[in-house]
Length: 237
Image 1 (tube, rainbow, N blue to C red):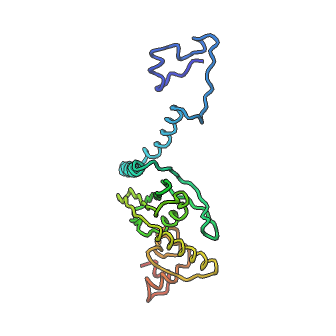
Image 2 (image 1 turned 45 degrees about the vertical axis):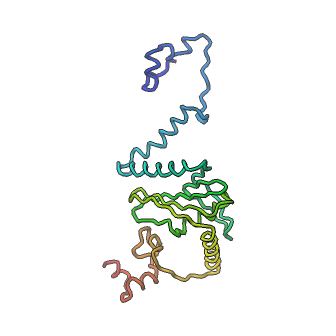
Image 3 (image 1 turned 60 degrees about the horizontal axis):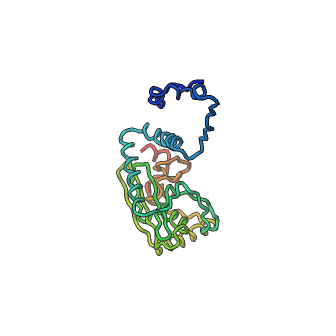
């Protein structure tokens, strides 16, 4: 059966009609077996098209943001021959509960570690003493056993926030100790409230950015509305 005359083969078929039906043109010709999983130029090209498709559907400003994001990562990778972990899941074995954790991107050598985290909202995120990124750094530290710390990167294209901060081994050790103490306190039943900037996405925050549960956090309510007690009236403000 003749090969379909498509855009991708137009040049070849127009120059060589026989290439459209090699079985008819070459006696005893046997077509090769196509392996969709093989590392071939054609398969690599198809994979890149699939990766780019959702990006091309974004608004122009977001396409530019993605370009800046990728350029930042490319520039970072230019510095050394880093090994690359993308969405690589690890067991957090330094915690008693041993949960699993997955960082967006980790670049490492024996003596250097980078934690790269993409943020897609418009609320500014600071890498400085960022608990999420410190958690990742401690959890992936074994990949870079000779590193003197970890560089934490926040990539936030929506507001052109591309920032980094180096956390040395003393900072990482303190975070690890504080995290272990927190885990132990929670496991022991401690339910002490501690309202603050970290409450933004808490489900009990009356003005949180995420899904909300009921009733609201009493510490937040007391702090925000010290003279009011009626939840419905507060929400009507």
